[in-house]
Image (cartoon, rainbow, N blue to C red; front, side, top):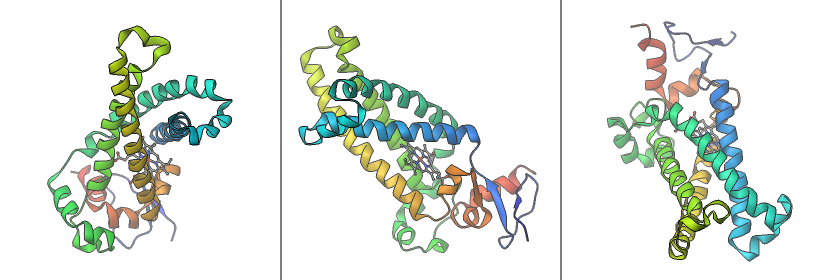
Length: 223
Ligand code: HEM
């Protein structure tokens, strides 16, 4: 039996081998540009954060180049993430089932998905990561602009810059942790990486992890 794509109006049985479209090429390109920016920002940022990590600057052509490119990569990340935000914010709105899902985190971690409520395109964990990333990126860009002396030296005081350095570093550490959780979850839930590489998931994956989304995709559009 060959796999087939689910089209609006098709009836789907859990036993059928199906593939389901999850991300367009544009969304995937947008995602990987954002991801590349965050990795580069983490590396250049850590290099500037501590003398112990200064050796990383060698990867970017030295200390001055690292210092010069770090804020610009931040600007690219900001606009790139804004693209992701526009695409996905609606699917990340909090729903009644998300509270129940979160309360049963033990079942999530022990693989008892039959005890969980049916979830839409994203589960509560993914939604939490999405909103945390959104808030942290706003904090990072705002505090970054305050200390971007090359262009905004005269606009802020030394005290404001000092506070900005502290906030920027704390937000950076938190977003690196959130990013690790995001990547770990993407690898841990088998079949998820394919969503962002090929743009598709198997029907089994959608049925098991995002059943409400699959039902909406198949049945909702018909009605
Ligand atoms: C570099 C390592 C990364 C990997 C391997 C990765 C992997 C993935 C995968 C597999 C998905 C699809 C999840 C699904 O459809 O259920 C996804 C979604 C997503 N990723 Fe990443 N990602 C990475 C980095 C990032 C970064 C750095 C950001 C943002 C700063 C980001 C933001 C998102 C967003 C917003 C979604 C959509 C999920 C949602 O809206 O809740 N990712 N990622």
